[in-house]
Image (cartoon, rainbow, N blue to C red):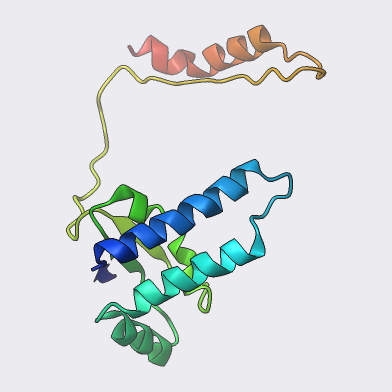
Length: 153
């Protein structure tokens, strides 16, 4: 995995977040499934420029192209908002490159959780004008499915 700690000045960060906010607002509020093409292009360009401005990015990209396989790219930045931007747009030239986003360079190894009790959240949608789901029957099926776990405590 190749690590890339983003070094953005305040102006760059504010610009990225502003375009990102506009992108997500358009994505969520429009009747069409896509944001305005101009917004999408502006966000793609801003993200691409931000990545290309990083010192180690070009070397990472060239190494991957020479090997015909790009290693996973880990984008590191302390701001969750910056990490949650769609950085995949900047890597659109190579869709094969996996992308990981994290707050810190060293990720803790995964440890399986063995704590009980297991908690499961179930949500049921009930839109108007649609046949009502028999959620009591669905709940009974879930309880039956979990009964072996429940019998073990």
